[in-house]
Image (cartoon, rainbow, N blue to C red; front, side, top):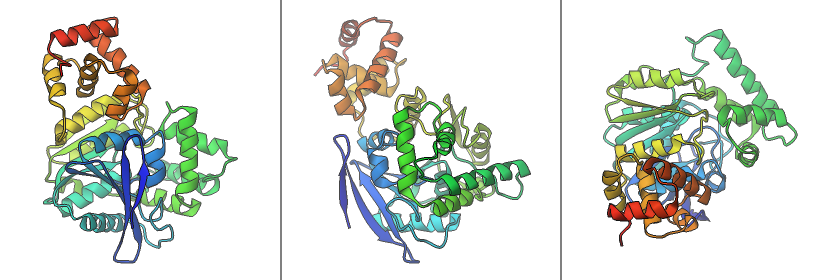
Length: 368
């Protein structure tokens, strides 16, 4: 079964496959190019995430140069809601089912937060399938693992109770604020409202609480030492959901893993977050973009102080495109283009768009 949803100048194709225990799993593909698989985490809904203001820039950026594959965990989103079993082993098997259904051989694997443990487990079981492992705000051990402190266990149980009581209810502003502050302290009201809608629509209170606790029972401390593929690990320094130390420890366990701290307070990087460009540049350098324009590569050599994304924007500015046109071409918002402009002008020490165009064209950037 296939369903198309239209995003900003892009579409995603949603399909379903069936696990060995009869669960229907929903997965989506978007973009063109070599495959890139993004493992599901807590709170996903293929349709809502695609349309919403928090995740859409992730998907559109990774769909520019790759065929992005993502899915909803069993029990949530567009996958079957009524399921009996949730565990790390089951999630790994579900990922295997999706990969087999798509029939791809070798690909980078991106795991966000709890999805990092699923990605890591799959990688250890299938090192021949995974070319690169990318983990973002992930951890090796949940708070409910026996070796953790009583304080951590009590905090997790308290949030479980809040989920059971306040999940998806429109009149529980305190509940929504607690989770918004944890996930995205810099979020706008629009983004907070979207998060509340996601909570309401993606799964039931009982399943949300079940998944929350199961994620905190994750323990891949020993398994992490068996990873044999190139690994890149990101963690935001001010993360309130998964402490920075958890990311650092995970990186120390995986042989030869590279660890990249990102200066941010947001567990989920927003489109205007200054760390977003660094994250994108590092991922593209790590796995290869598969479709970078030659002009942007030339600009990177000429202006090494600019990020790859800033070079793309500068090239389009020099070609005479307006902010709205740049936004359409790069699948970003006009506001994000304006933010890029500000940083580009500052780095190039120019005070106007006209001067930036002159400087770029004199250096050979932006020519047709």
